[in-house]
Length: 68
Picture 1 (cartoon, rainbow, N blue to C red):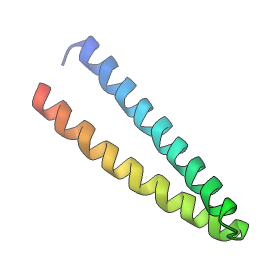
Picture 2: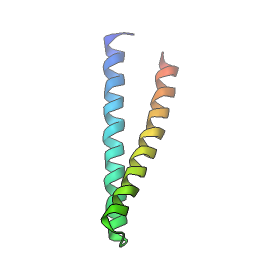
Picture 3: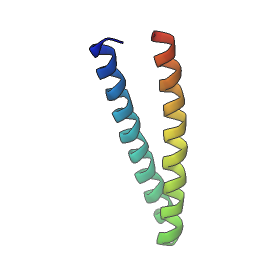
């Protein structure tokens, strides 16, 4: 794998983590806006983070395999 491909893969992983953090923040805000207590909102945002990171990681893995 060339250094360019490695750098692109690392950037994709970083983008996946940042996107998952944004999804978690939005889930927290929506839960709090809906009247959920803070611990429940944190739990919802954690689930949203894990789900988003799983889906994005799966897509990145398929794309990385296809471009190999």
